[in-house]
Image (cartoon, rainbow, N blue to C red; front, top):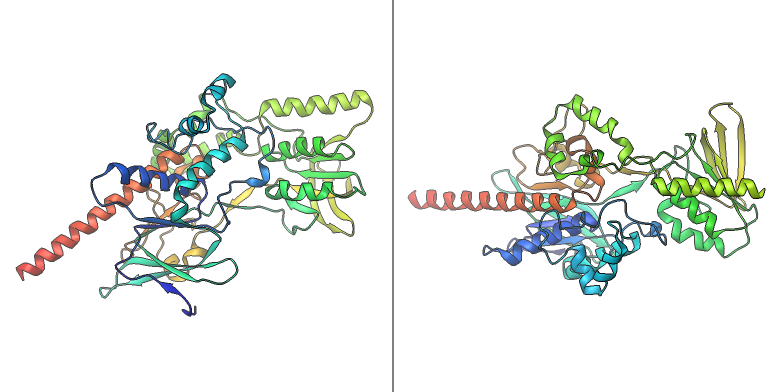
Length: 455
């Protein structure tokens, strides 16, 4: 990699942590560090973050009017770690002048739009510590004369390819989020898109006449059902086809006992459990989060479908037990190829748009770390990254930097790995791990000085 035009920081100007990505996970970490720095007498932790987006944003494409959170407001960025923090959702409501109004709603579940505003309210406090509109292009180990790596250089550049910058750090936290998962062989286009882009693409679609008067939505989870409801309401002249491999949407298990899988203590139990128990728990509790839908939304969609059948004009079509076999852009829209799982009958749906509510997947952090750092990461017998309880990658002894994962640890830490439920507690655990590592470095440094003095 060329070093031309790099702004390189000096050895005396080293961050305790550089966070890669600034979504809710690393925002919670920034808050945990800020809470510590304000209260502790010891030197503050110095942290900075890099984010591809031009400003804070969390699933902006699905901030649908009226859509509510699936987690309690008490699972905000801080409350389960420290309810006295100035960054609680209740503190946000108080500052916005809506605390009494929210109490009168008698709900634990704010709208997604309001919770996003809460995130933005928190993120505004750290604007001077976030490099927005920057992408990380490399992470380089800094090896000392003893052959050990105690720092890394995080190389980033502006999205337009200019203003390359290097930050040195003793720890990094990878919080780059999830990437949309598309069916094999399907490529997105102007009329074929993932739900991530729903509120970007749908208004564009509404600006022109619909030739086919049909939109297909592929998927059976919460995002799929919300997308079907939104499109049915937004395009009253169009037929909305919900393509499901099931007979219908399945309700999420949000009962109190099942919800214990999202408790912070469940992470401890899961981490210590044998591999067979982990597989069992993930399978048994998949219906708390994966490919499931809020019960009230299921009932509302069924009621709509039934009422249309009574009226004789069925715009909401549920193509159940049906699999998408292919999709592509057409000259004036998009085409969905589907096959019935029960009869084998195949058909082609000519659509104005095909929306893929096919979920997300984790990105392997080794691609970001680069060959040298990735080679130092330890893996299990299945080739998965080994992660310590403090969310730090286990590495070879020669590597003495903290590489913390904010997600992608479901195999070690359980189902909350990519969810909001335990962000408050996890951020405190990562912060405390960094403090322990700093204390260890200071102790070793004092020992080295004492040894040199004796000599």
